[in-house]
Amino acid sequence: MTLEGKVALVAGATRGAGRGIAVELGAAGATVYVTGRTTREQASEYQRPETIEETAELATAAGGKGIAVQVDHLEPEAVRGLVERIRRDEGRLDILVNDIWGGEKLFEWNKPVWDHNLENGLRILRLAIDTHLITAHYALPLLIERPGGLLVEVTDGTAQYNAEHYRLSPFYDLAKTSANRMAWAHAKDLAPHSATAVSLTPGWLRSEMMLEAFKVTEENWRDAHGVSTAFRDFRDPALRRPGRGGACRRSGQGPLQRPIAVKRWARPDLRLHRPRRFAAGLLALHGRGDGSGEGGGCGGISVRGIPSTGNNRPACWLT
Image (cartoon, helix red, strand yellow):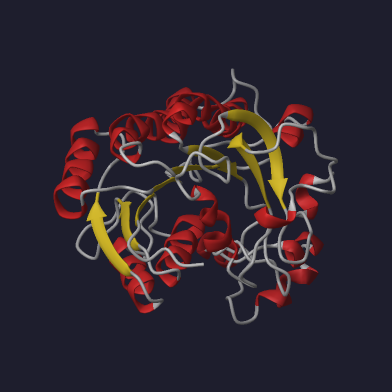
């Protein structure tokens, strides 16, 4: 599978899953615009070393063309300018990944709304919801100009898991359930344009911040097992499970109209064909663009998962 000639925008690609997805899109041959607030000249309030320039360089090194653009996705004019640049320079947008977040330092676990810092809680919602809607508002008109476009909403937790489990903070809970619903709603609007919306939950991730929290690196992360047995299931930022690939859920337009059993998430042609290329395999779902229903135009709304190369699902969403 190749994405040569395709243009992707990964919004929120400075680190974590956004960076991993951007690199995998590059590995598939795409031109990848990567956005975030932290550059080599200017850091965000995170005060972390990762930059969007590094992500773009990794996407280029992987085989694509990475382009870094500093954008605060809470600023509508900045997002509008970004999309205008993509239109001017590329003339198309095939894939939009909404992975904007930024709330790790704001939420307070196990505190009811009356005890949680209100300013921080409301900012979580702005970062997790407003940014995604602002980006979709400006980017989707370009995406639907050609059939077969794909929108990916990255979140935390499947619809079933989030419906049955309180996410330990009213603000975090609302933030992460909203992304699933946004994907579902966008799918309704995109279907008449032969475009697809999906939501993706990577499970526990070996992101830069998580590795740091467990005091390990990507080279010795298994040493953290003594700290947390759950760490053995952590994916890397490209959403690859150790030795077996990754897992996700699909929410949106799709060709199958019948229910699918929990442990049989998709028909064979929706499986991931490239071992250890989870993100690129998922994003191949942007489809042929011929309206045939092969990821491209039938307009049915569903909730499904897509199995990894090991046909597994993250254990964190089974409890």
